[in-house]
Length: 116
Image 1: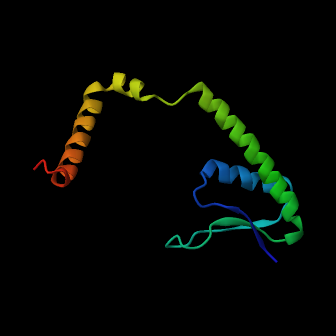
Image 2 (image 1 turned 90 degrees about the horizontal axis):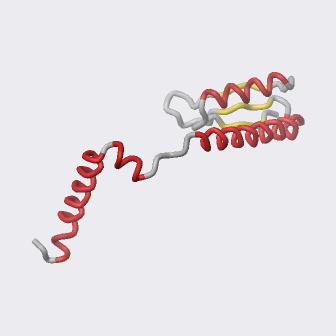
Image 3 (image 1 turned 45 degrees about the horizontal axis):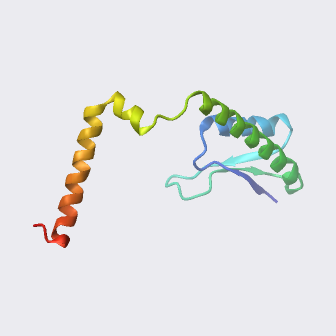
């Protein structure tokens, strides 16, 4: 009986290709299902032989641990910009957004606070 081994919903093409290659390299017999026309079905990789589930799961978990470590190392080389960095890059845009936010807040709360 077939068993779902890896869901493809929300997975990048790069990661999906790597998992497909991993299963192929280890001679695990699998097939792929799509999410369907309206995206309501399960897109995933299915093992044809239920007895191979533990082996496939261990391979995929090891791959994902390695992938997370490499992505974290890569992110450490390129840290996310802070609010100060963004303000220094585009002070007028950040100031305009802050002013717009304050205006929306004022218009939303003023009737309840009796200011209008």
